[in-house]
Image 1: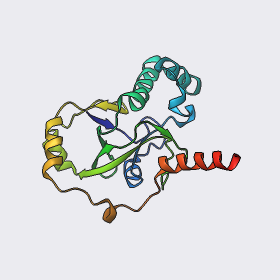
Image 2 (image 1 turned 90 degrees about the vertical axis):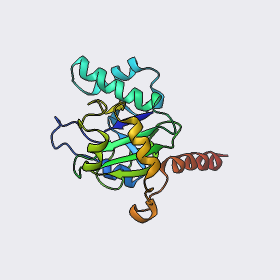
Image 3 (image 1 turned 60 degrees about the vertical axis):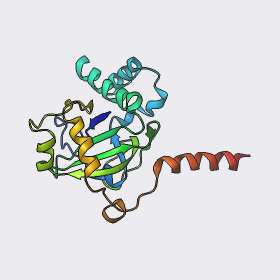
Image 4 (image 1 turned 45 degrees about the horizontal axis):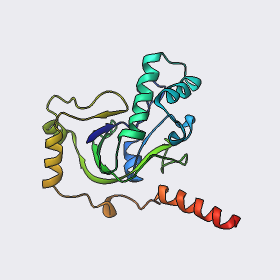
Amino acid sequence: MIRKIFARQPSDWHASEDFASECYRARVIAVGWSQIGDLNNIPSRKQLKHELAKRWRKDGNTLGQWAGSLWTFRTSTKRHDLVVCPDRDSGRYYIGRVLSLKVFHDTSALGGRCSFAHRRKIHLLRVINTEEAAVLWPSRRFGGKQTVSRIRAGEHKVRALLRRTRKVSSAKRLPIQPDMEWGLAAEERAMVWLQQ
């Protein structure tokens, strides 16, 4: 499965920012709505929509789309799925493979201004530019406009591109960042050990 995931604030927000490059430097894909807390503690999509409504005054359709994107990010996005994250600022598209079994919640900044707390670890496979994207998606349309959507158009082209092109050497291009998911689990184990 291939998903398009926007790591950005909605365009109708004041001072909307795009955090795609920060996410990929940190080797995660992240989405917002951090104020609702850990997605793993919300038992249903209906409850998730309710939690969103408590914090944001939006119409039912908007809240439904937000809940759908977050629920898809939590439950339907699986380990080994491919993700494409468009970067509005640079015109690049980051392609990665999901490594996390589940979403983790981390409110620390990713290394810049992004504090989106709902995250999945990824392995960066390729960065493509607008010209390469035009070959994959000639109509320039792929996936939906929601934060998280499935890419159906050009899926075989993306997989073929990944098979035949060079792999990104993350050691040369990206700074080393701590593994946040592992770090949180290690901290939990340390706290249990200290309390014994």
